[in-house]
View 1 (cartoon, rainbow, N blue to C red):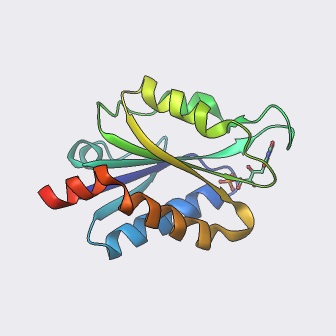
View 2 (view 1 turned 90 degrees about the vertical axis):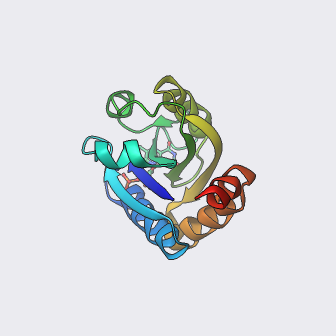
Length: 147
Ligand SMILES: Cc1cc2nc3c(=O)[nH]c(=O)nc-3n(C[C@H](O)[C@H](O)[C@H](O)COP(=O)(O)O)c2cc1C
């Protein structure tokens, strides 16, 4: 089984989370590559059974939260019906960013099966929790069984 992590990151937290998620997936036997949203390995994406998309939270900390640099996310390559799990990294309150990111991903054809918000003060723990939940999802287990 193959997977790709696609992230949008301004100061590095979402990239670090994406890299950690990719490393944990590799440790679980899923061949995974992590790419910035504007540098996606299209060949890898086309061969991937699962897609992970992450963004940071931009807003006024408790109001108006939205995915960071949405124009970059809106231009992400088409995902074409692949099972997709989303995450965001945030400081104080992610608001409705996962719902908004789900909309962006669905407009690129992704089939979103779950999402998780990772607080920036524990990127390592959050990434690990994300992968535990992700790997436990029934859709992922059925893909693993077929791989
Ligand atoms: C301009 C700006 C606005 C932000 N707005 C929010 C916000 O509204 N709510 C929040 O919880 N975090 C907010 N944050 C914190 C970031 O979402 C958090 O630090 C995130 O982990 C950054 O990810 P990155 O390092 O991948 O860019 C903001 C950060 C910046 C730079």
